[in-house]
Image 1 (cartoon, rainbow, N blue to C red):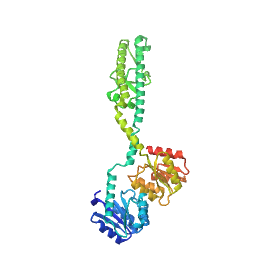
Image 2 (cartoon, rainbow, N blue to C red):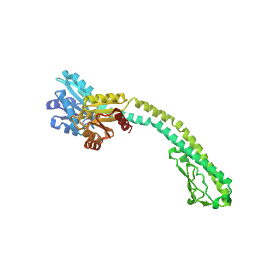
Image 3 (cartoon, rainbow, N blue to C red):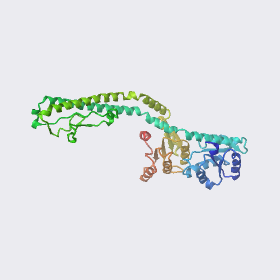
Image 4 (cartoon, rainbow, N blue to C red):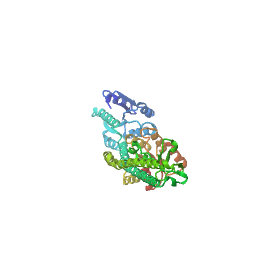
Length: 428
C-alpha cells in the first residue's frame, strides 16, 4: 500500500499523546484518525477500519487489554486486515519484544519518555503497509497447499477411471463376440427350421461415435441399441453381458430374407469391433498422453507435503493444549494454540488454519459465538470447525451445528476418533 492510501488509527487514553503522534506523522500520511475515549474504542475501530493501529498507552498491560477487548467485542476485528504497533519505554523493550514474538502485536517502537528516533514510528508504519500489500497480492499459502494436496490425487483418480474404462471395453468386446456366435449359429440353421417361421436375432450395435470412442470411458453405455432398418419399431437393446434384450420381441423372418439379415448382422459386428480396438488403445495410452500433467501434480503433492495442514486449537486448558499439540505433531500436522476466544480471533487475522478445534467453554467468548463469527466472514467461512466439549447436552450440540460447526469431540476423546475426524474434514 502507498503511504497516501494507508489509514492509521492512533489509540490512547491521553489526548495530548494522540496530538503529539499526529504531528509526528502528518507529513508522511494523509489519513490519520485518533481514538481517545475508552467507551468508543471498538466503535472507532469499526468506523475507521484502519490498516495500521498505533497503541500509545502508558503501559503494555493497557495495550494488551485494548487488543483483547477489541477482538472480544468487535464483530469485524478478525476480518479487517491490519497491523498493530505498540509504543513502549526503554524499561519494557524486552517485554514488548516477547509480545510481538507471540503475535499479540506486529511491531514495537521505543517511544517513551523521549522520541530518540523520530522517523522510527513512520518507518514501522510504512513497513506494515508493505506487509499488508504483499499479503493482499500474494495467494494464500494455506489455500495453495490445500489445492496442491487435492491435485496430487489426480493420478490415482485417473488410474481408477482407466480401470473402469478397460472393464467396459472388455464387456463390449465380449458382447460382440457373443452376438457374432449367435449370428454364426443362425447362419448355419435354415430359415425353414426356425419355429413358427419367427426368428429373433441379436443385431450388432451401431459403431460407437467418434465422440464416445474418444471420450470418458466411464460414459460408455451399459446397453447398446441395435436397429434392423429405419423404423423405430425395429430397434432393440443388447445388454453388455451378451444377452440380447430383444429376444422376447418375436419378429417373423422369411426364408428369402434370412441370408440378408445374417449378412447385415455380421457387417455391423465387424464395424463395431473396428471401433472397440482403437477405443481400447486410447484407454491404454491415455496415461502416457497426460504424463507431463501427472508429473506436475506429483510435484505439487510433494510441495504440499512440506506444508502439512495447520490446526488451530482453541482451549483454555493448558494440559489439554499440550496434549493436542503433541498428538497433532506426531500425526504430521502443524498446530497453533489460543487459550481464549479473543486470542483465537487475533491469530485468525494473521493466519488462516485448515481446521479449528474449538472448545465450547472459554473464559471470555463462548466457542459457539466464535464459530458464528467465523462463519459470518467470507475469509474464514470455509474453515471446518470441530467443537470440543466436556458435555454432550443436546442443546449445546444443536447450537454448535446452527453456528456452523461440522463435528464434535466429547472429552475425554479417543486418539483414533480425533485423527479420523481430522482426516475426513480436511479431505473435504
